[in-house]
Image (cartoon, rainbow, N blue to C red; front, side):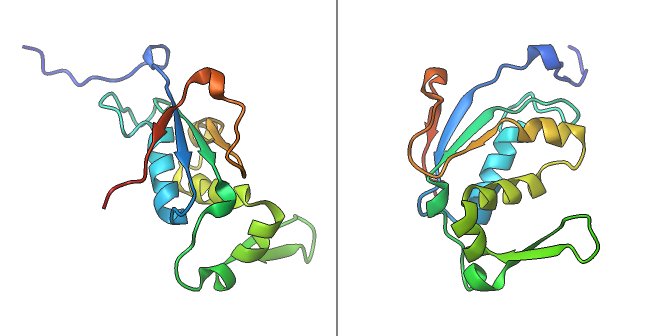
Length: 147
């Protein structure tokens, strides 16, 4: 009997496609589910330093819900890089501009902040409506997480 720890190799990873409907989902809980799938933490062969994650398609991003008074009180900041270039936007303003940014920012913050995290983030596809161009990949539909 061997007591060696299994470590996944990048060429051995088998990727699946998952479809998540964001309608009525709470933003943080949705982002956690998506980030875990992108990192591959839902698989037994998860290896922290190898991209073992799957592709995730999120539809109805414009219908995601935030709890409490976050719609008006939570502020997202970014800097343009120029003097005096600090920009801010509330959740409501960001949703009006492009609702996909809400989910993308939440998920990006939950991934590793290095090249591995950047690679994992490219497997996230977010769409405002209920249509997506990935039908050929035959995505597995994930329902709402039961409590």
